[in-house]
Length: 315
Ligand SMILES: Nc1ncnc2c1ncn2[C@@H]1O[C@H](COP(=O)(O)OP(=O)(O)O)[C@@H](O)[C@H]1O
Ligand SMILES: [Mg+2]
Image 1: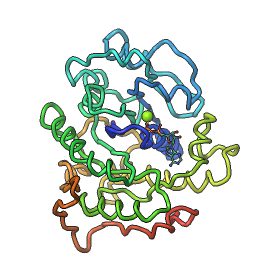
Image 2: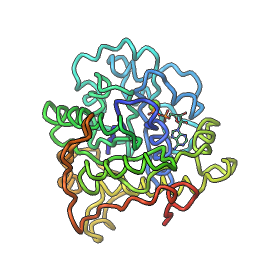
Image 3: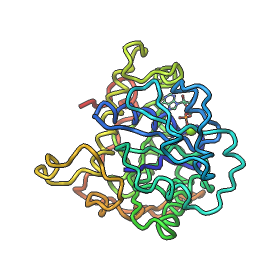
Image 4: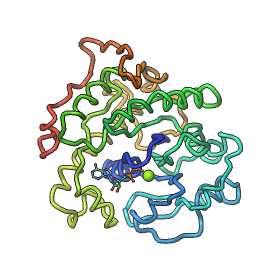
């Protein structure tokens, strides 16, 4: 399964969520490849790989095959194709280059593509290559306004060259304890199809930034206080992601081999094949709201002060 982790905004936690999901997926026995498509090359620092020669630039340019650009990281089970500042100058040409390069890639069960904070050629390439698009967002007014354009980009990639692309959902990150954000959360729930906003939400916690900043996973015994609670949240998000490729019937699920076929066709995606019904709140805030489906798996928004403080439900 290839997943594009994207948002046109920077600083919302795309890289953080990518890396924490990668670590959680490894704990679930999956081999994970992180493809860093952000020219700021932050993944290098966070996973502590150091400066390496092969990067995604050579892969996009056709100078290296994917297997030649994959480097091991200090995080066992997580491999990386590093980024490079030279990505800034990559003009992109067709939006299908990355799709061609990753075609038939089976050495990893899950490929997470960490996208740059744009909807430019790199993100379009990621959406062209992916089976699923996962948005990472803050519950902010600007995030709501940006959602429509984001889903347009998703629809365009799907229509142009990736008909099997499906919208996996939205991971909400950086939740604070304030009333304004709670209002935004409610708007977001109203704006997006029921079930598309994944739970649990990820609160703003210094331990997340500090642990990754030190090159550690949240499971590391040396990670700071509160790390296990945060790791448990990402465990649940990882399970949610894996459910995208797990057949509905328990019998089939038991028979499912560990290796996930990167070929996009699978039953789980069919119901989410299209971008979710979205009615984005406009600048005036007067957009009509999409109705939530009664009795659906829509998740209730916890009280603002129930989110931080470790009271997020950890199953
Ligand atoms: N849940 C969180 N709690 C605390 N800090 C966070 C959280 N998510 C991200 N950050 C911090 O916010 C900054 C931006 O996150 P990053 O993952 O780099 O965003 P993006 O990849 O979308 O630009 C980083 O300094 C990161 O450590
Ligand atoms: Mg990033």
